[in-house]
Each structure stands twice: as structure tokens, then as C-alpha cells.
Image 1: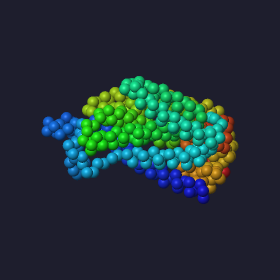
Image 2: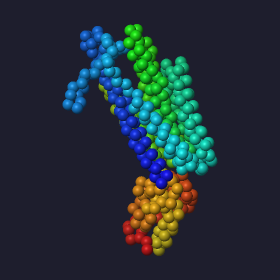
Image 3: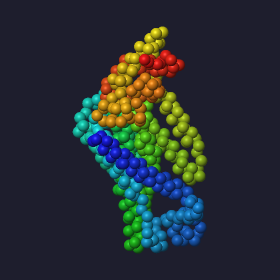
Length: 406
């Protein structure tokens, strides 16, 4: 019952996390698009302090949007703020991180094949990376280096490489990726909480007090908002990465993570330029080509499989069934015996020969190509057993009758 309650708790907060994340990212994308599509306004609007305007149609109506250089002639009674989308996304994400990866550290975060950590050690390392990464970023942005976008980007990239390498050599692949994503999310929400919202409050206060707003507040908010823009796509990738073990379970998972961060950030540049009516399809094409090349480079090497001799298939099938029942059925069964997974993950059940044949391609992808299953090799499947399953998959791929079992 405890696992069932935790599953529902996780479901509710994951649902909230996705909803608020959509709201945050959607608002971010919209305002970046809006800012980049503002047109030079007519003189009478400029005289009122309007920097740019834009006309749009949506939902059966015509909208007129105007952005002031600093302050309007008169503050409106109602001013809409965009902050709780970011805060709630981060808070629900931290709850999920705590419940799944900290309370369940032995199941999701600690991989004894990578580092022999205790639960407290793993949690301490995870929290330390979140806090220290944020402090480092804040100090960097407060330094004189922040005035040069290329230098700060280079420093952040070097730091990201170090963080990626260290996390993937201390945690499970999934745990490392999720923590890298949590660091990005923390920097982004920190930008909102520490810089963007205070800058906006300073602007509003200056207007209400009748003094000239300090332009540096707007410039500072713009800098951090730009950082958030380029971090959005890498963060979204990491949010879905646990479904794709060919990335996080790879031997060079830390390099793959950095490569995808760079590729997705570059792809974001294409859309930002497109908003400004600057067409650079070469950027998008380069991103697509880079993804294809990455997929080719990290593709699993063909497993050398000893040919199945005549009359050997039936015995091989029985041996494969024994391996799957011993190593996989604790979770992937109609009645799992595992202490964490009380229902078959993804609905994959391997109780019968027919079910084994049904999921043969998935078994190959997860237990042979990426060796991601059994999860963190909890049941200690050996390399010899994986080779045996590879031979069985070959039999399974060949026409049906040879793959029946009595």
C-alpha cells in the first residue's frame, strides 16, 4: 500500500509539474516571440513613450500590443505578472526529485556499478551540486565578465562539461541527467526570482514614485531572460530523457548530454532569429545533421552472435525463458515481487513465451543494446546472460514456429 500511495503522490506532482512547466515555457516562448516581433511604432505612439507595437489575431479577435521604452504615461490599475508559473514548476520539480530520487535513492539514484554511495551521501552530493551551481552562476553574472556574452557562454559551457562528467561518474545515468536538469531549472527560476521580478518591481516602483527608472534594471533582466531562453530546450530534453536509455545509459553519457544541450540551444537560435525575420535555415539544418551524426556515433555496436545450430533453438528458448524469469520477471510480471515496482513498468509483462516474443525488440533495446535493464542491474544479469538473450532474439526474429515453446 505504501508504494501505491507514493505512486499516486508522484503522479499528482508530475501532472502539476508538466502543467506549470507548459505554462512557464509557453509564456517564455510567447514573450520572446513578442519582443522580437515588435514593429517601429508611429510617431504619436513614440511621443507617449512606446518603444514598439504589434498587431495580432487570435481567438476571433484583433489584439494591439505595445511595449513602453521605460514607463507609460499612467500606471494601469491592474498589471499582470508572470512569476508563479516558474516558481510552481520548480517547486513541484523539487518535490518529484525528493520523492523519486532521494527517498528512492537506492532504486533510482545510486548505481553501485558507478559509485558505491550511501543514501545520505548521494542526497548530500545532489543538493550540494544544486546549491553550488546556483551560487557559481550568480557570482559569474555579477562579475565584469557578464558584459561579454561570448565569454560567459564559454565559462558556462566549461562548467557544464565538468558538472556532466562528475554527475555521470557518481550517479546512475538517469539520476545524473535529472540532476543536470534540476540545476538548469534552478538557474532559470533563480533568474526569475532574483533578477527578473526584482527588476520589474524596481521599474514599477520608480514609475509610481515619479522618478526616472534606472535602465540597468531592464538590461540586467534582459540578460538573464536571454539565458533562460537558450536553456529552455535543453531542459525539455532532460525532462523526457529517462525514456531513452541510448543517451543516459551510454558509456559516454556525459558527452552525449553536453552535445544535446549545445545542439538544442543552437536550434533555439534559429527560431529567435526567425522571430526577427532573419532567416538562417543553415542553423536548423546544422542542428538536424548534428543530431543524426550523434545518433550514428552512439549507435550500439552489432553484437557478435554465435549461430544457432539445428536442433538447438528449443533449448535456447527455454534458457532465455529461465533468464528472463530470474532477472526480469520480478518487475515485468502480472504480479511483480519487486519491492519498488508493484505494477509492471510500461505494462511490459514477461510471464509467458508469447509475451517474451511480443516484447523481444524491447528486450533487445533495453537489456542488450543499452544494458539499461534490469534497472540499475538490480537482479545482476551477467554479460553471458545478455549474449544468450541476443541469440534468442535472433531466433525470435526468424519465422515463428522455431520460437514456440512447450
